[in-house]
Image (tube, rainbow, N blue to C red; front, top):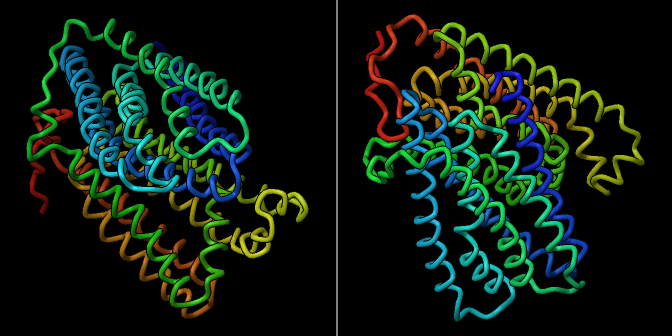
Length: 416
């Protein structure tokens, strides 16, 4: 497949996946009472966390696989098989733990446990197709899933319980999973399945799971902490501003999760780093344009989006727009590091996630909610600067002789 076609298919696939998640929540809200939707949202949040952990442990190392076609095919088969088995085991534990617990939330979690192999398995095939440089197959599976989930939820009656909605949502992904597995089998039938590399001590997924936890949990908990000890409005304002920039979060996640196979088509680290830098510049420009469009949005339209939260959230648009522009640069710096030496990203994520928390608290102490938003922006700027400084240092050293695989990472060469 030509590079331009692959990029279009990959971007379209990310858009379809994001649209599916949005429409699932919209459909659930229309079918549920307010308390039931709150329970469904809680269960869906648990799924989102498990999805992130699964992608970090198996998907992100998988897309870094280099080598001949046989190695990539074997890695894809192994990653999908591992995800299905791990999801089945974890889902069984979750369902068993909620079996005798009363309440709709417990029934929703029980249903999530039963459908977990379906939803996580289907997501794993997307990473596999990206690694095999066949994003059009991932797009096909996600389009099938979108149609099936809308059809399944569309025939449900209003007032359906949380457990039923979760079960219908999860089982609606089964056709997409079966289709994706069939397509994957056609591409990888001659490759072996070996789960041992995913269980070895040096597996990159362990580092990426820690990065996922630090990068997501730290910022969320710090905002909640400010709301608890300070002004509760800070939570709503910052979360409202983050919601407005939701489409950019999808682009950033796509860059790190599905960018390596596309940029990896280029010859030489120099061209790959330049491509990552160019992508960062494009995403930063998109963030600036998106922030400008939101700032020009009429107040009435803004209230249609966020209700009463629009007022405090719109006041944070300059800070949040600047933060997302810096995040674009930093995200593509991490993408470059993932291709140069994946073992270098964990320290940056940990150090600068904690730095952002310090700036958040300091900004809030100095200037309230707007100060907190500018503190987060400053944290993102520092992270982006540190990331590209590290990229520059790695570019000046010899490339490692051992190719990166989906299993253990090669030892990182010493730096001076």
